[in-house]
Image (cartoon, rainbow, N blue to C red; front, top):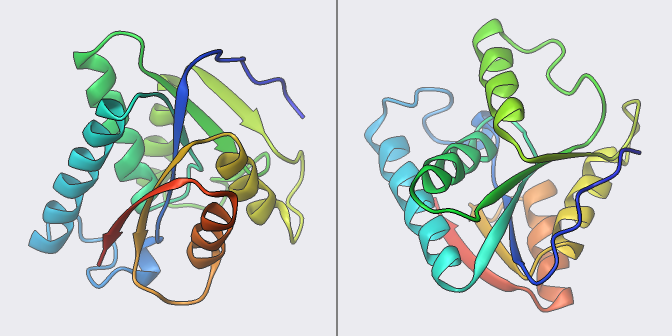
Length: 171
């Protein structure tokens, strides 16, 4: 595992949300519902900042994770002291993705202030370990969630168990 920068006295906010397959609009980011969700994510990131969050952690998955990271990058352009961390579940996370998705992933990764690699290789539990790492490292969790079983539900449940402040964005 790679070392993570230590951020003392900084409240951290992590994010969980669905991949395009679980979104009603799929990968069509021009869909008005997607545009509206991106606005709500942007508002939630700004709200987390008002609550004291200065360090934001993204799991780097396609879909909502990318929207979140881009909102943080925009916020960082407006305010000093905002950091973005990529919590990468395994090396080669974007291998096999479409070229445009890989380019977006690489752009966001290069915008990050730090990268935490959870596992060198893909393993059945590496995504869950990534999610648990993000929750344990945070005081706030922003969740785009439609109630279906999966990694987002597990992450929200774990955050509730640990007593994190939860900002839910239903879809």
